[in-house]
Image 1: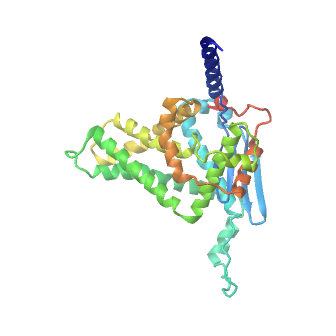
Image 2: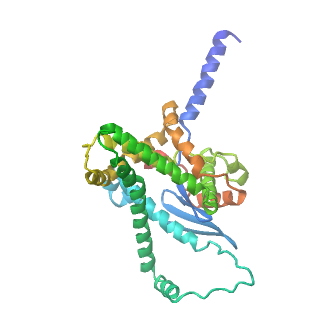
Image 3: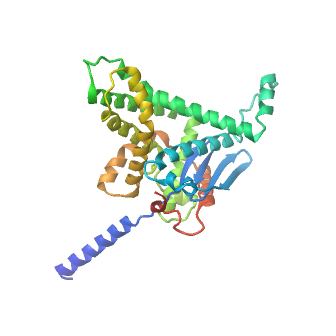
Length: 341
């Protein structure tokens, strides 16, 4: 073989590898770890699968994407806020559903079972209706958002606001606020990841990632195949949280640098939807491509996933496979990332 032919063959192989890499399938199917299970969301269906004491229990239902209800809701920078709220709503419902199958701790035989209090019996009776359950879900979601905003958005602004203007101000104050926000987020994730029950949830989170990675690679969805893939995935909610922190630094830096603490706190609330909208678009843009630049941008988010994912056991992987299979589209390719993002 001549040098020219060898060079041509080498270029052809490199071109084929590059073409194959560019055509890597990316699905819009995503999920969330719930109590002893996984929720998967496909193009037109949601499936919740848990491993109850007596075996796998599943529930699935069809849904209409919010942008199909009103095209405006699918516009860039609008869809991010709507999608965030919708994900919170669906995630809370899935968590409450999975909690019904969470096995209670067995008491020793010699310990007598306690009779439920009058208030507990009244509460159980009132929550039997569907309307009451929706009210509880809504209240839980609102309280969760309020707590998250208070701890991760307002608290850093309050703490940095205590520092005198002469010590640090302007862009440097916003940068310090962002670092404090990042420290609180990392500290929270680290402490939560030490909790035994949460460790199992994070293992299901890892099973979700592995299952989706196996599917995107085109491999058969079997336990052995899924086990081979990484528990870290480039398009994950954990990465989105980090993106929010980074984007908030830039957004808050270009706003009027209020020195009054209460005006600063109010500006954070007003600009929060803007931060979420920009973060959503940035996350989607990075997730759509795979090159050196996007891999550098994804690296911090993947590192953070080491806190929020654990290696799953085979039983957890089986739950992930079952959940994914239930939301696969009828026609191959209908769940391609670009069609929805």
